Length: 133
Image (cartoon, rainbow, N blue to C red):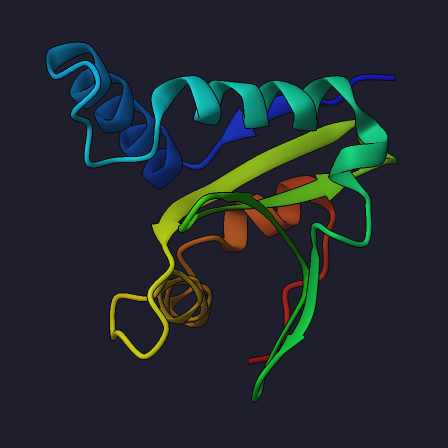
């Protein structure tokens, strides 16, 4: 069974920028490799087992519990998403760059955005409990 793929407004903008960068500067894109990003999105949609594997589950990361949020790796980039078997839905929250210790680290950014309530609508839509941060 394949999942329906949806995006938060923030993720839509990030993906649009990654595509535009890749098209404008082929081979020199500073954003994640566009073909790799498309491949990861297809894997999440086409392969439900991949979307729900233990490798994508976040759970506890250091002092923060991100239970319910899943991630896919693209080199040093992270694609954060929610997945629901009952609704047959995968909802992409954001794409971030992983740089440990940086204030713009992907994990720091996703925690800040969840705390601010930027993804509350997506958590409701997916039927996933929002992590208690």
